[in-house]
Length: 213
Image 1: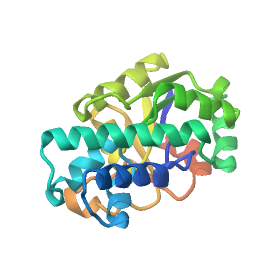
Image 2: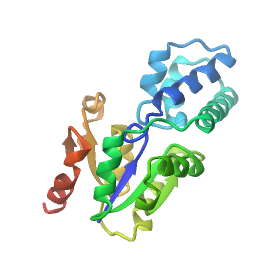
Image 3: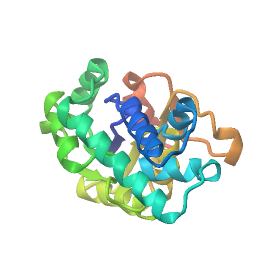
Image 4: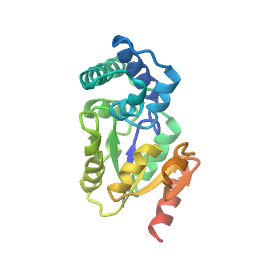
């Protein structure tokens, strides 16, 4: 049995860096937009999806959007190269315990090199069976990446732990879904996770319960 984790906003705090990079990239194209709105659009998703969410409010053609996306990704990478994001030590400790019972895989919005650097800094590199990066992918390819992460753990059953937007993708990849905290968009499309928890420390019991149904 496997747990596939989207580590940003679960273990590593990267949202503000990514949102700031996207704001800077938009300003370079003379687009003025509220920073809070950008941060909300970036919640739980890569820059490409955040930009799609913002598109109706942006006066940008396809070339402009591609340029903004490229600059945003480069800006975030520069920030991460200068300093690895802070991580939640309590969540790290829970994952170390879980790896003794579950195969752990990672799906990340970071590049593969960035994710490995962060996992090493958190002392988790030996606990993770596989890392799949979404950084260079089109959003249409995300489902395949989640499915591939499960295959690479050599498990036939798996549960995803991620921000709600990513859990919607993981469900299409055939994973059970475990959500931490509320989902502000749940009333929009009627999506509901298999399990909703307050903290990561409750995951073990939740996984065993959802697979025993």
